[in-house]
Length: 88
Image 1: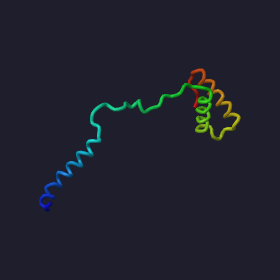
Image 2: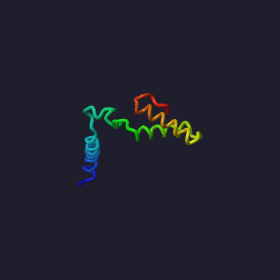
Image 3: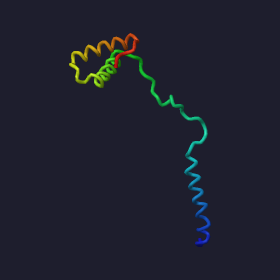
Image 4: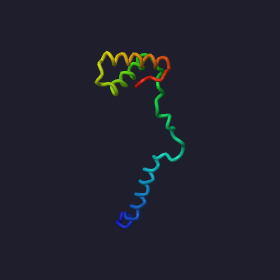
């Protein structure tokens, strides 16, 4: 092959590589919706309610006595299990 032919084929080779790279991109379809990525929440049970309530007191009542925090968590768990709005 001569250098002239090689120079003529170089742009075609670059175009072919670019086409191959873009062929992997999907440009049609809607794809997964924003809600598809979010995992559904499991139903509220006592263990999950206790975990959420303890995490809430860790954020807001760090310096409070542990016995008082336990009372707050117990009330929070009761509210969550009864479907009420818990104190967090």
